[in-house]
Length: 114
Figure 1 (cartoon, rainbow, N blue to C red):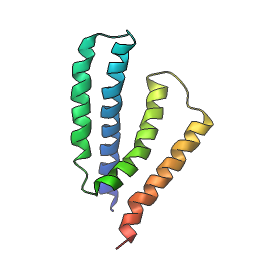
Figure 2 (spheres, rainbow, N blue to C red; figure 1 turned 120 degrees about the vertical axis):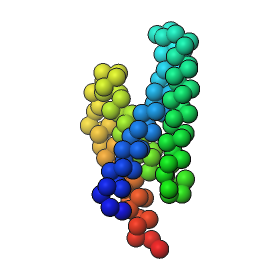
Figure 3 (cartoon, helix red, strand yellow; figure 1 turned 90 degrees about the horizontal axis):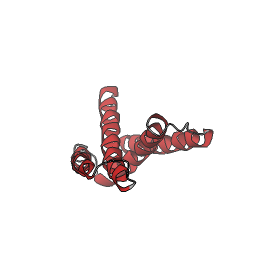
Figure 4 (cartoon, one colour; figure 1 turned 90 degrees about the vertical axis):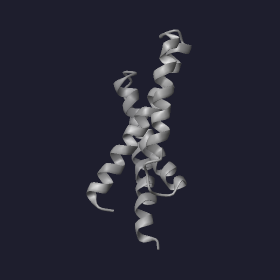
């Protein structure tokens, strides 16, 4: 996998994670009384975007989901910091690092298997 392809894939994963988080966060705002039921419309659109973005990956779906999971964890902790105003702990950062290392093994392992 070349750097341009890797950068595109990683960016696609981040966009996918943001779409999923927004699609889940907006209904939470409504359910907790911090937003209008009209938030369900952009939430549904965001979840549709999330599903569509997952289809753009050429690898086998299980491998894509496994790798995406690590990027999702990292994006969720960035959301925790940026939106919820909670600074991630060192264990949060360590967990993200371990998850991303695992994702790299999955993604790069395919390159060597054959």
